[in-house]
Length: 569
Image 1 (spheres, rainbow, N blue to C red):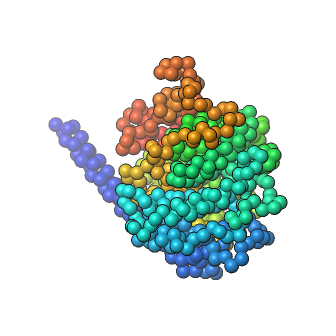
Image 2 (image 1 turned 90 degrees about the vertical axis):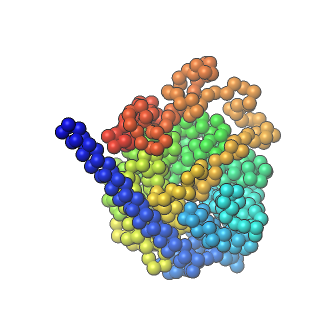
Image 3 (image 1 turned 60 degrees about the vertical axis):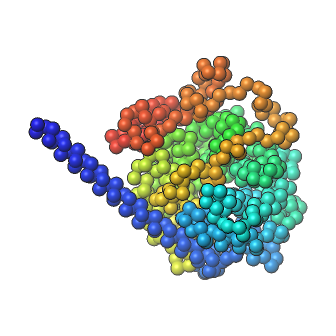
């Protein structure tokens, strides 16, 4: 009797303690959500006051920069005359406004752009940046504005943002007119490719266009945009080495590599991201096959414990042992793949670096355990916040909210000024730089807000672009391009009449070369992808946790009810 009473008292105390803990974290989330909201509006309202309709805010001098046309133009060449900007930060802020529930301001922004924005300007712009920031922002905002479940803009909206997006997409097309199909990195919005334009571009620059241009084709019914991006992506993939690695920079005319060293950071990062997300958004098995091969190569040749160094694409030998801030997106991508332990492992290392310096330095030399001598800056990048959001969604471990709180507090302490939020020029001195990048509102604030309030995602299924713009996953988009837009020289493209190889993502089998009894002798060309936990994100036994996406080892259920959080592989 006494034993049963003790058990009852223990269970009562345990349940009370858990209830108090849940109440504590609910209060913490409300408090942190409000802090992020205040951050966003401090940045947004200062932009509207001091910079709009120019592209970005200079928070220290409370002025502006037309960065869309100035990006990369260190000598400020080819700048348009009598140009007042493209309202870049407003475009980037639209989906964040919806996520924060400000439909009134969203509508006001949509209508202003509908009536005032034009791309008929003599401006030389970077194709990749304009694609992910402007085209992606317009497409996402159009979809949100016309969402049948909750139409955010009433009768005054007549698809003007989609019209603007299509106009911009048409201005992109001349950049793809090369012998290889790989696009120029720079194009003039009014005149097309400039005379003597540089032929050098990056892997990201020509391999990370498929989400925005594919979505534009699906919305307009014009297949040219998706076909151009897909041709570029396939050409790029055909240039991979025998190790399934790609370099960092290449020539769009000759199709030759310029820089053979590669990694998961600057110049390559979003290439991997878009392969996987394109598979989810458009359902083409080809995207998954490419991603699977590329992902395994990254794990084999770049990974060193929780870190990822760079390596020569031809030999796989390490070239640079360095951490770059853009690499912090990788754990978030691994969450989408289902490789939670590996994501957690590398994410914690990025957190340690953040704690060491107060923010994330642009480049950190792993072999010397020191900052890069010149790249000591932090331009308000979102990647660590992004991966933290994804890991919390996958595990519901409150530790990730503590990481989010750390990031929020650091941003307010080191980067907040009267006129907005300033970039950091040197993380050792916290000297500021007069620039508030548009991605601070499009991504950094958005992912931090979603970490503490994910109500926007309830009953919705979105893929976020590399610039943080949500695109809905729609079954109607899971279609092939018309055969007339599929070049005959894509010899590795499998026509529909051929037997289709199975995907382990749907069959949930392992390993990648296992013979599949359902489909005869076909090999499964996919990494393992088994759910990490029950639908409520809590596990009760090891069987609930599935297997690791690469090694196919079974994951363990922790005493706290989370899958593999402390399993380092």
